[in-house]
Amino acid sequence: MEWEGSSTTGRIANLSFGGALIKQVEVTPPKGTRATIRFEVQKKEIKLTGSLVAKILRTVEEFKEEGKGMVWLGVQFEGPEEEIKSKLIPVFQTLFPDQDQ
Image 1 (cartoon, helix red, strand yellow):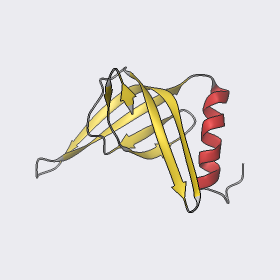
Image 2 (image 1 turned 180 degrees about the vertical axis):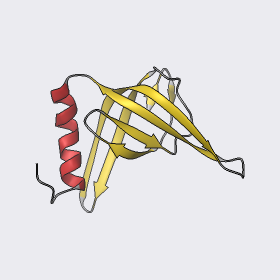
Image 3 (image 1 turned 90 degrees about the vertical axis):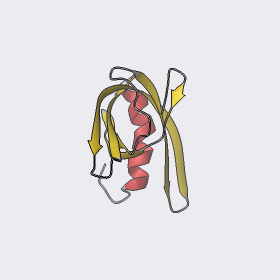
C-alpha cells in the first residue's frame, strides 16, 4: 500500500468488489487517506498482480499483553465499477476455481 510518499505491507484478510480488510499493517495511514493498494495472488503456478485505488475508512489497533499488536485497515475501492471488477474477477477465479460465477 502506498500513500503520500509512504508505504507499508499487509495481508488481505477479506476481499470484495467494494473494498478489503487488510491485516498485519506496520504503518497506519490516516483515516480518509487515498492509497494505492498493490496486490499479488499466487496459487500453484498462477501468479496475478494488480493495483486499485482505495480510501482508508477505518483503522483498528489490537494490542496484546506483550505490548505488540496488530493493525487492521478497512478500505473502500474507488474508481469505475467495471475497472474494479476487471481486476478482481481473475483474483476470485484463481482463489476459488470451483465457485459458480
